[in-house]
Image (cartoon, rainbow, N blue to C red):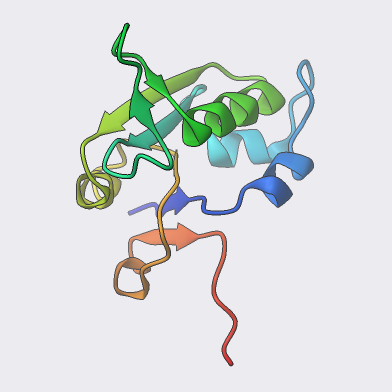
Length: 120
């Protein structure tokens, strides 16, 4: 089973990615199906919300996903979930390529987190 990648801090990843028009090796690793499937968690309103007028996803995780897709040069598919638990469950089926979640050591067997808290 391929580990899904949950991004908590994506600035280093965005910096490492390609600008539009060029293809880098990370593209196939991050978006193996040719599009970036981004898990959007509506359970955390700091990360994402539904637009009250249109119902479309909006928020920082949506913006970061779109920018990552732009830099990778691939289309972005927003895969929405009502809670972080639903996002974690979907990781087991490979339903998404990138997500924005809090680091959870208990779920690190299924998800490769991009940031880990330093030990004191």
